[in-house]
Length: 328
Image: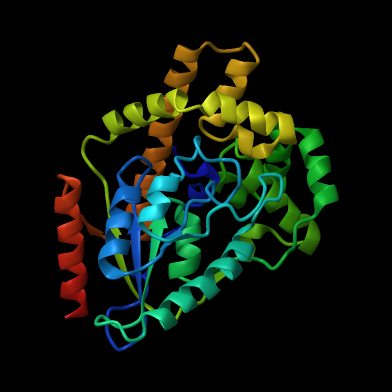
């Protein structure tokens, strides 16, 4: 299913292309695209062909127990290629952007060391659809260094998301305009930064590009809406409702991540507020809306080489050819 929507609710003016393609600096390959575009399969193909690990950049796949609803690579898929940055924490222990960068950077460096002697030189592979997380890694976006504030978060949860977003609108209208009204995770984080520092989040974001060459490959198939519908039905058939019930049983129904796409509808189904057909319909609708936001983000914030639609093996060959062309 979709990455956590909040990661793509921070549109900013498009800047220069991430990194550059010259010199002998380590290379970071980025596979990006909207949800259900085929990133997982292609990432595994690239990892196997280039002897790389797949470094996950999907903000919901960072959490344990959120497997079906996030379309996390299955055990069989993970057996085909090494995956990192999956299942880092329980879902009641949020990972903010700064923490994600701190976790990802050593893994990228480790891949560069491991592949130092490879034909193409040191290389690492990032794959995912969480635009803000990708930008943090590839363009050096630096969020404020404010640790989580558990007591404050508990108070914000008690206030409820509508009140919290209204507070954010009053205190930091720029951040509020970038964060969806239903996005509890990012709303809480913006308020957390504001209350901890006395300055709006929107005024504290800088960027220092990393010392890598970055090559971005993009997927945006023309049949995306049909793929989303198939994916949505598949998730419900694969046990999304049972997974949601387990998460509620362990963390409670107020867990913020249960407001994200698919989980909210499954929770409403369990509460008797929706039947399965309606839950599937709404999940599909929200996913299509999210994919539209992702497409906008990637076209404004990134400059990928867009791969042509076609059979998976055709896309893999095209991706490898583009990588070979860049490497010269």
